[in-house]
Length: 69
Image (cartoon, rainbow, N blue to C red; front, side, top):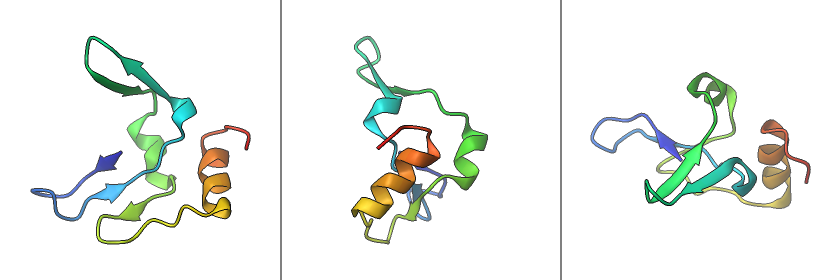
């Protein structure tokens, strides 16, 4: 998920565990039940950065959202 930026620049990307996503057929997309305030301290990376999806990162993201690894 991405938030922020102007005209697509300066966005931050927030990896969200699949367990926190719910697909809505009517909307044709995923619904995320996460308060925007909760994303303030959530694991993220800048648009221009390459994400690091190693085991430590995955455990950190899942832990942040309260999902066991």
